Structures are given as C-alpha cells and as structure tokens.
Image 1: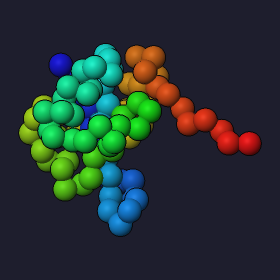
Image 2 (image 1 turned 180 degrees about the vertical axis):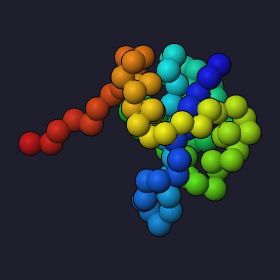
Image 3 (image 1 turned 180 degrees about the horizontal axis):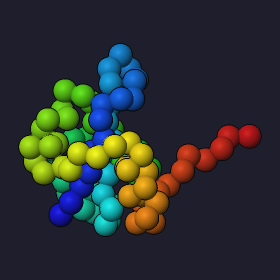
Image 4 (image 1 turned 30 degrees about the horizontal axis):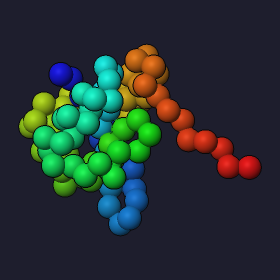
Length: 88
C-alpha cells in the first residue's frame, strides 16, 4: 500500500493543510486514513485533507512525501482525479 502526501501549503480554517492521495484506489486511501483515525468527512472528492499538525503522523504511518504537483500527476495518471463541478 502506497499513499502520498504533499507539503502543508494550503490555508483554510485558520491552519495549513496537506493532501493525502492514493495512486491505486479509494479503498486503499480510506483504509490508510482510517488507520490514522481520520474522519471520513476529511475526504474531498479524491483526497483527504490533513491538517499540518498530523503531517508527521501520516509520514510515520508510511505516506510518501511528494510535491503538490506530483500529487496532481499521480491522481491524473491513476484515473482517480475528480475535479470540482463548476457552479453556473
């Protein structure tokens, strides 16, 4: 099982966030996230939002550190990327 995490560079709700993704399946991602005790509500379309204070926990559990650009490349390459819908 390999999941990936990008740096905590995304602001929101008064803190910084990372994205946790899989390049294989959502099942793999959900299983890893459950092992970290992450709530399912942290899952957004194709990734989990991880607060910066949990970054080290994810890496210690086996998440591979990659750039934000690499996270997007991995999602596109695996076919797991889900874009936000445009509101018209």
